[in-house]
Amino acid sequence: MKRLALWSVAVATCLSLGVVSTRAADPITLDNVVSPTANSPDEPLAKKFSLEAATSFLDSAALAWQKERKCMTCHTNYAFLYARPAIAIDTPSHKTVRAYAEEIVNERWPKQGPRWDAEVVATAAALAFNDTATAGKLHPATKTALDKMWTLQQPDGGWKWLKCDWPPMESDDHYGVTLAAIAVGVAPDKYAETDAAKKGLDGIRRYLKANPPPTVHHQAMTLWAASYVPDLLIAAERKAITDKLVSLQKPDGGWCLATLGDWKRADETESQDTTHSDGYATGFVIYVLRRAGVAAADPRLKQGVAWLKQNQRESGRWFTRSLHKDNKHFISHAGTAFAVMALAECGETGPKTAQR
Image 1 (cartoon, rainbow, N blue to C red):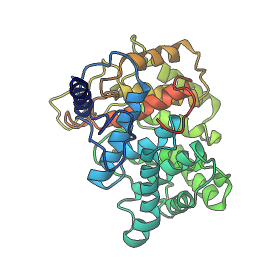
Image 2: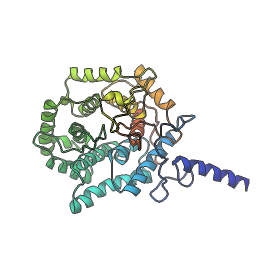
Image 3: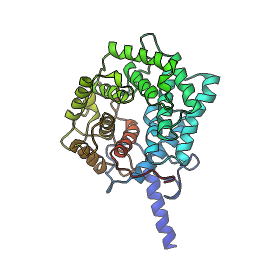
């Protein structure tokens, strides 16, 4: 009885963190997923860095979003498809979210059409990145999404993007253009050399030439895209963006999302927090700098990695304050994904395993 009571307490503790749903050893699935607790700046720091806890948070957030919201979104389950292969791919969570993205392309689009043009670009990018990180081959659903992406490209080379005033992902057209460039550049099987992709890339180059990045964040997105499509930036531009990103590192070793742009909050009585480092900016900048060729052994990146390991929260996530309103802070989901991707790029996650 005593052992059962102790086990029950442990399970209740895990459930309160939104990390697991039955036993810690059980894989998280649509059937047993428990939605993570709200993203809060007051959540205590973890006593020790845990990749297992980060994995559980990502699994829970992505599957709960799919189950409850029945959609894909940049900050949660699309971000999951980028990050999950850095840990393991032969898991129920990865298979389920991947299958859902394919279902959107193969079933919902032919019957109902995409919800927005942005959904096509975001789906193509997530699937292409996931293809390269897993099988290394272009999946038919990914090719369908990429090909459809070009049919929605505007005469100026851009796309009609979501402008929900939710930066940095859903507030301007420039983000969508760099995401499309990443999609075609990262796609395997030389997709970028197809006629459709070549024509589309010409449009992207035209757009980027006529529309400079409006924020440092979008400069970083362009730098990331240029790691796949080199002629998007010349050497001097690459160096300037790299130097700018490095210059924004905080004394504690992290980066702060609000310093990567000049976004206004929906509640104008509140100001952006440009003082504290956060998970999204730190993970995103480290990942992009690694893609740009900065060595993992670089002291600045090592300081950033140390910040990530020291600032994980008890639930396994890394908190990031929303640039929009102090309510949901869903950017913390993407921040956790980028934190994992950054750690993987710096050799901090170990070899991939078949199961958690």
